[in-house]
Length: 497
Image (tube, rainbow, N blue to C red):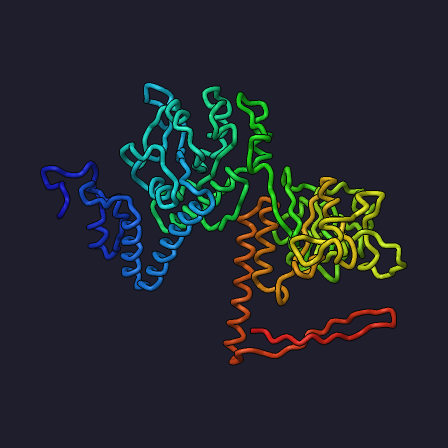
């Protein structure tokens, strides 16, 4: 009823949905896939919203459904606004599904996202221009020469277990036809899970992540939410994989080969993802372990107490350079390309004042990267210090950077107090730190998941306290502090919310 088929004009094959209903088994089918084509709804965002609302009513969770629709609309809006703000204009794209799906075409062709379906919806809602939106249907076979001539800003490559994304990358880089294509030379690729190619609740998150990934590959910036599975390719891996192909990746042309970041007022640009990391202090070490980066760590030092049992197995794989503050020789002997520390003492210039405490001795001297003088060593233009009003002691972070060793310092202990979080570290300070480390080490999705886990732990703790009948509890933090005359007991009151 309501369709175009009748008893004398049946569908191509029968469905058993009425019989399942008679047997007490209810059914629901995506409205874009109805058996009778005349009953199918168009593949639009409104269809997705109505689908979610219908399922919400069926399963008696209308509030959840409305929230999901609201989140999708918010993601679409944020994606479009982010692209406009960051790029200033629309970016063009081709959504590449496969090279083997168009074998019957008279000329070599590829299967790409056309003017209908989820790919076009996601590109349209994110502010990207689908270069083949004029083709009918959800997908279309397009000549390879037309794809090259279209000159997209980004190539969105579908990843499936039966057709890996890298097989498509290999195809393009092993064909002379693609060698001069801008998107191939710049490796402007975005990886999208096959499951995100279908209409569904993931479309909003996918649009937002695609914009973030697109901005990353064409500018080097990066801030992925990690909710949809959208990702980009490791540029070092692309360089190595294509080295012996017809069109090898030229690292000098890949914008995201270099990653820039600013930490405690000091900006640094990496030429590759760090591979040989030294961590100093327990907080820095556990940050790295929490993101599964133990295979990048060539040494660790200055652990306060027992490593969290959750990370103990990973920690035991990392060489221990020193039980206390490591010397510059201990650090340099493992040839690090990056140092992560919780306290500024890890980067301090060596002092000759007779200091006995590890935190006051300093580490680096003229024998390695010193002298450590001047801008961002004695004073910080981004902070409150200047040439006539310097910090208490010099840091060697700029000199380490010049020597090819990146650095990262917990911002609650920036050398210039004005660069520390106002009022001290907060939850947002932690989330920001995790996000930046994820950016530096090219694991944004891992960082996003870690932040989600931390947020969840806080929420569980707060819920447990409320369940106990208490809105808050007063507490005192005890921290022993040692001076030259012996220990001093510090009691730091805290009232958790």
